Image 1 (cartoon, rainbow over the protein chains, first blue to last red):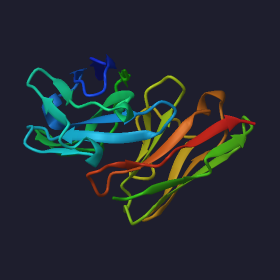
Image 2: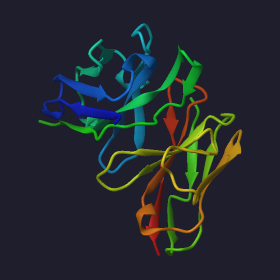
Image 3: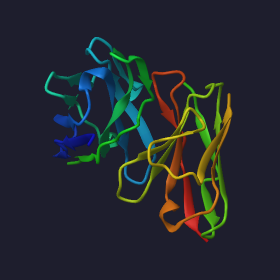
Length: 127
Length: 108
């Protein structure tokens, strides 16, 4: 079964830092881009950042550039280091899979992004 | 950045009836459009990708159409479990990936 499990959320003061983790299982992690998406209380979905399969490309929404860093490791985990946190960063943070593009014994495969989501972890920035 | 606009913001429909949700992109996204369902307190779930392809396990009462800038999600006969918030999302031109503001589908 494909699973994404986020952790690391909590209450932090403005200006503080937090590191989120997303543990994955049930699929070949190295075939997929990975994303962080957030949802402020009572609001819609906002894409935050993503990272290429090999970690060589990373992209961010403008509002977090210079403050957040996305990373991944070879143990099938995704991370989001959040520094200089602001009240407006308060949200549930989801990790989401995709897209994927890879070759295997049966040929080339492309899979659409955001096909699997984790259950989310709540980050509250408040004094 | 491509702006996604959904209408209506809230749609009230009776169980068993048909629901039609709309999504408009500020510029063409070809068919690189997904629909995501979110129930209260739950994570989002992919319903549709490529504008009209149902994701794994999604029932046939859900259908999607459109290309370019105008898209529609239709639920042919609403079941109780379909009342939720629906978001459209473009993945044609990124970063950033962008979502619409959502349509809340509520019981009439």
